[in-house]
Image 1 (cartoon, rainbow, N blue to C red):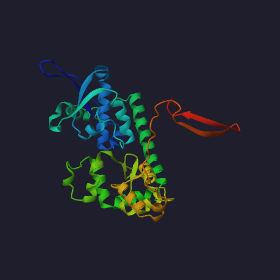
Image 2 (cartoon, rainbow, N blue to C red):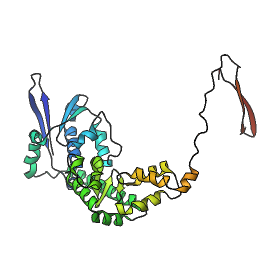
Image 3 (cartoon, rainbow, N blue to C red):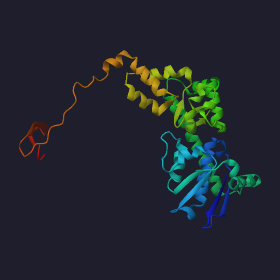
Image 4 (tube, rainbow, N blue to C red):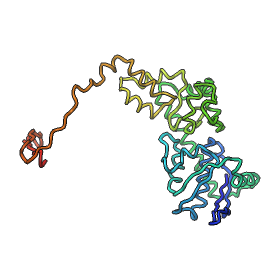
Length: 314
C-alpha cells in the first residue's frame, strides 16, 4: 500500500511533497479487498496527519466502493462491517472531499506499492505489536461469527457446508473475496446472484461463510426454518424484522417476513384493529377557567389527589 501527499500550486501544477509505502502484515493479507483498500487509506491519512489535520483536502482513490462508504456527505452506511466502521470513524474526523481516479491513471501512488515488494521490513517492536493486534482482532471477529450462529436453529457447521454446496453463494463468495463484482447488475445472468449486487459493498467472508455486516447469510434451503424460528411466539412483523436485523440476512428477507405474518391466522387475530375515528384536538379556550380537566392521581403514599388543570393557562 502506498500514499502520496501532493500540493497544487496557484499555477495549477501538482508537486509531490511526501511518499509513503508499506506492506500488509500476515493478518492484513487475509482481509477482503475492500478492507485492504480501507487500511491503505487510513495508513496514508495517519502518515500525513500533521500536514492535513484542520485543513480541507482531496482524497484520490482507485477503488470506487470507498466513495459510498466514506463519502463525508452521506455518513457511515448502516450495515457497514465493524472493521470498516472503525476505519470510517478515523477517516471522517478529517475535512476532505473524495474522488475516484481510474486505476490506469493512478500510477503516482501505485508505483510505491510495486517498488516496495522486495523491500525487507525492519524488525521493530511497534510492527510486532501491530501484527499481534490485528491477529487478536481477527480472532474476535471469528469468535463473533460463531457466537452469532449459536443463536440460530441451525449450527454454524451446517451453514458452512450449505454455503459451499450452494452454487449461488459460491459465486457471491468468489465475487466478494476477489473484489470482482461486475460493474452493472444486468451483467449478472443468475438472478439469485444479482439479488446480492446492491449489497455487495457490505459483504465479507469469514470462516467460509458470507456475512452482511454482522449478519450471517443463510443458504436458501434453510430460509423457511429460520423464518419459523423468528416467528416463534408470533411476535409480529416489526419484532421479527428487528430480530432478523441482529442475526441473519438474505435478499428480500423483509418481504419473506411480511408474507409469513400476513398468512398467519394467529397474527391476524391478534393484530391491532383499525382506528374507528380520527382523534380530534381540543380547541384552545379564549380565557382562563373556560374549560378545566379534573382527575384523580394516586395512590401516592396511600393518598389520592384531586388534580384540576385549566386548559388555557395549563
